[in-house]
Image 1 (cartoon, helix red, strand yellow):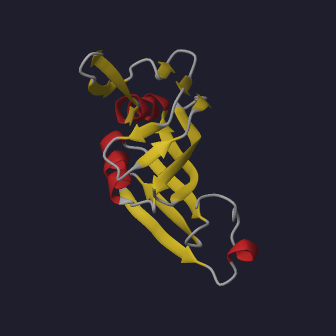
Image 2 (tube, rainbow, N blue to C red):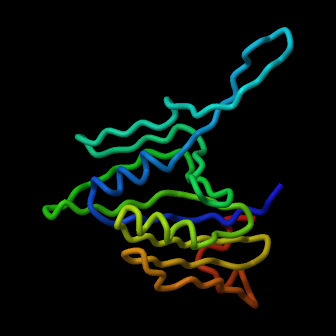
Length: 162
């Protein structure tokens, strides 16, 4: 079982693009028993676990959702309000976690593909580090792994992760 690096995934950009990113890259998997006598089991995407209402501006994630293309990164179950400003832009914050650490490369690809900015701030209590990633318009601006001499005192969110 991995230690979890937990924190916040922020996505900023045109509302349509932010919603497209979520709709096309969040996946909840479920197991279905096909034949009870031989216990044949199939894994498939649960299309009911993620609901998106583009007109009213919300996303509902009922279960832990995998972020496609990442190395074991997930969005926590969440009710996400997506408010559009007068220019058609939005900024959302979603609770997330990654196994062991958060790698920036998959998020750079998502930022380029959807023309959005992405910021991640995550914390790993067990290994006593935090991760800060900032990507703007597909360009990696910062990717810092911050280690601490006194984790509980110096870290902003020392009880997350682990």
